[in-house]
Image (cartoon, rainbow, N blue to C red; front, top):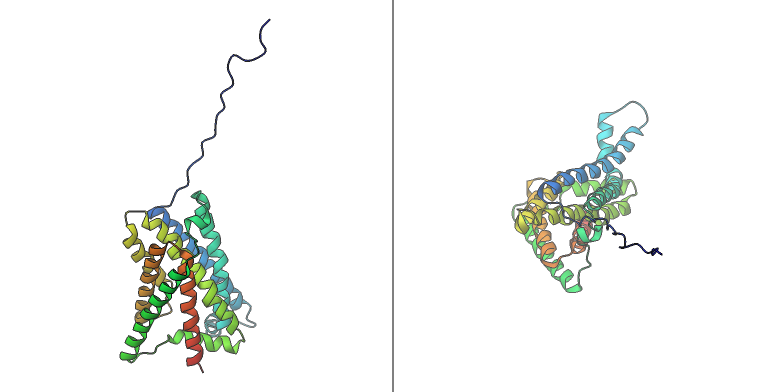
Length: 256
């Protein structure tokens, strides 16, 4: 009588799993353009809503005032955050690397946070001294004007949320999180990634003049080095938020 058992067990085919990867120079650059576009669209949607809700015929001067208003800017910055997060999530999802791992979202230690705060205070204080020596304003006029407008609209609290929470998260996740991670593992290496991501981040602040461009760029270099040294994007998010909060308080004081 033949055995009902097969002569050999069936071969089990294990599906091949593609390993996670990090986007290199060109992948990071192209995805970076997509993330920036999504951030811009999220912000532009708010601006468009405020402009087209105006009553009566279209007035260019009135539209410009609305676009530069504190309430409009605050809401546009806040709405840019979910758009940027969605774009970054798509890019990291397609790389098959977990979102937090790709962006190195590790909480810093108190020691590393203290080091970052001291370094940031020294750097900003140096720029303030240089600004006074050159007879320039310490705070950008843009910040003071936006604050006055937000105060007139009763939206100072919204401005603080936008500048001290939404902007630091979206900008740091983009520059020190996504861009730095990919570029640092390309031919640029760490120094090139710090330099290029700082340049891109500086380019996001087109509202400032050349002097404050230099200040923003130097802060970007510091944040890039801290991101490299302590392996934490949350560290630069917190420092970015503290820096913006101090700048907001300074603008409140200057605006009377």
